[in-house]
Image 1 (cartoon, one colour):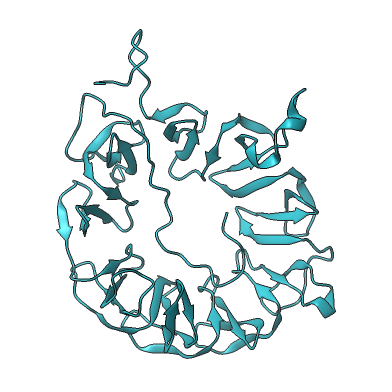
Image 2 (cartoon, one colour):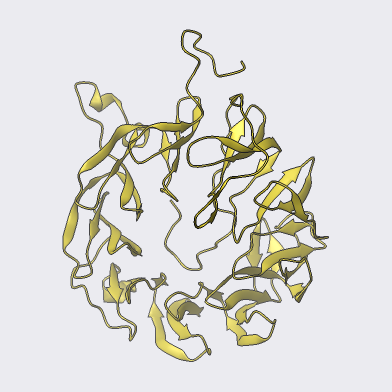
Length: 381
């Protein structure tokens, strides 16, 4: 789980699955089109390489990539022999921009860095369009993805020990114009028309035109969702997390040790050392009984219950398996995973022992495919 503190760096987010698993016998070169367009595809590991499966677990783009990322705006960033490029939904090479580091497409733009061997050296960042054209030339110390027509950029910062030091953050529009002049120590991304900004260690919010909407007075601030945002009150005001409206007014009386933005109407919060979920009034919908939990996605949330049974005292909470609950707190998929990610388009990435892949909403493994009956081995082993 990522900490809530802004800025919320949205970079390549999907966990690339790593397991020695082999490919199913049938492999297709392009995904079948459905009534709403091409099928949703998921990066999946097969042996030492990666390809893409559809929701049924069928490999539709052959696994010849060293590294594969999720599709975004019908393009996916992949790597073969240290060479990064974009592919389309047929698995064909669509774009190979000249740059040292690339990002996924978001709102018709993708970040590109030139002059840096890794994201942690002092290269210059800009943006390309889906044709690979440099619509915003690399001139920033750092640039993040677009949200609501704005992308956070840093001017003047320097990298040291994999940390961007100094400089000032602002926002550009899709044409590269400075929509908000770089004037902030740190910033979050826009959500609900507002972005968190930090001045001299205190966080507030600005609107899309850069006008101050909530004066900087919080110790930390998260993104708005459903009209509310989690904020950390400074020590002199209690030092606890709460939720505020778009004017910065607290709307939840009780405070929490930690709070995350609302997702699907519920917010993940911590009371003491345990996590649960509250509604927009701050009332508990799922009691705080979990040592670890993730946000709701497609009606389900991954949770790690406390160890149970006669040997539970010998199992540390961080070693207990993950499962999934619904919005009422009911157990939908029993705990049985060493790690569990959020559902997206009907599948969730999970890992159990040496098996990494995807499950559906019933908890059935979709990838990797089950071993051949009577062999105990994956297909084509």
